[in-house]
Image 1 (cartoon, rainbow, N blue to C red):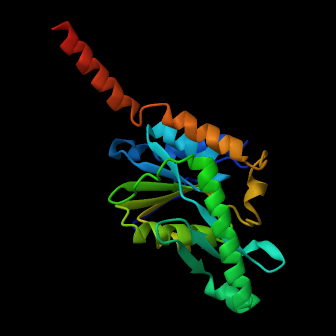
Image 2 (cartoon, rainbow, N blue to C red; image 1 turned 90 degrees about the horizontal axis):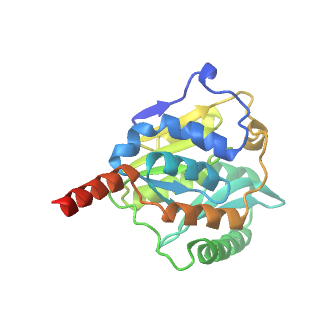
Image 3 (cartoon, helix red, strand yellow; image 1 turned 120 degrees about the vertical axis):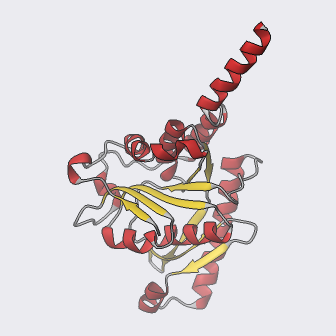
Length: 247
């Protein structure tokens, strides 16, 4: 980890109106990356509206990193691990949580299979036959709507490192300070707008935290694909062609 950016309290008013507003604020803190043609990767579903605003502001490509939390028995929101999509899916357990909860090996295997099935469903719905954009050697900005325990994001960052991403930037609107500190060790740079205390839950820091739908994910991905990946570069190419046509 090289750097962690957290604006002062006076620069970040909480709660955010919604994910789109949080994304626009996050994009303002990430503008220095626009010249490097980064790839913005969203964690679906809630991370997609945030990442869409970042990608639009940076003129960057937008793609998904498909990951699913492994929840504790009877408490699905309490993550004990995560599985990340890829040619060889990455499976990461939170060893501390596993020691505390003591789920059976059969439970873990069943949950792993169930979440891989959901990843496959989302791949079909969201990608619609399109391949994932390669991350090898690229600056990758990983975006979610917030971090709670950090278990899911930890799995994502480890998977991206194994996939040989060139530079990994973790970018979220809000997170607890302790989880952010642990995750920052897995990224090359971390940008977070706020680390409120007490933290409690991501949704408490948004006025509108309605669940993001599959339809919205598909719509935002389609909107990004319909524009040039880098508007400034596209404008330069257009001017060059016009000049050539006038000669």
